[in-house]
Length: 150
Image (cartoon, rainbow, N blue to C red):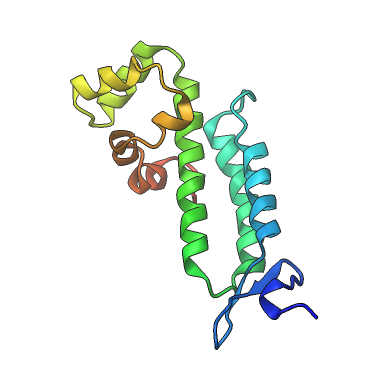
């Protein structure tokens, strides 16, 4: 007989504690990330407003269904991961190093750091996790963005 923490039911599972809590099943998190990857695919030429609109549609339903889960840290890590995906998409849209540099400077990053980031040979995913970009494109930026609820 399976232990309760190994069972999955309607996308939920249980924690391994004396008083078990409701958590998201592993497969649920994998499906969530796969769907977000489809919506934030860098090779599709969608505007950021369109992406955010589609993400909001999906996230409203998903979070409404899985809201009863007790593991808050999983939701926080998914939120951080999602914002990193959005930063990556924005960097990809800026394309040229001069555009990246100008946009980063306009977001308040010092010119020398903006030059380092814009001229970097690192990939978009890695650059999206730098402290400077995280600060410039943090929560405040996404709250200001037109039509954004992410």
